[in-house]
Image (cartoon, rainbow, N blue to C red; front, top):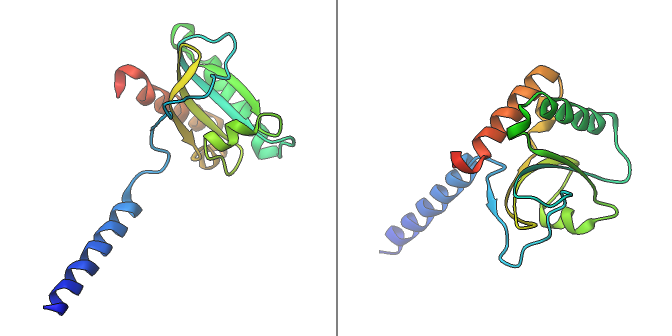
Length: 150
């Protein structure tokens, strides 16, 4: 009997580990109920791209910011998200709220001046080798994140 219980427990543990390993990273996360004010100015409803960075930017971080701005500029104005740089040294609440570990981009949906959901894009570090593919990947991610495509 004990052997059977131990087998079930171990199988459940292995199953849980496999699930954790195969879940995609950067999943969309609903914002906490108390919310945090949106960083975009002026505060309007819609999608924004936050560029979270520290006081100093390495060359790769500057590349991420440049490629993101270029990709957004290439999008049609009617559906173009706002680009909002956030210095987390001055605004540490954003680093904490988005569980920031490195400089990165975060897609946010803002409503009534509050972030209602977000997705951190740590994968931008894999995209920085080529500006064209960076733009294509960012545009596809924004499209998938858009409220009508959930």
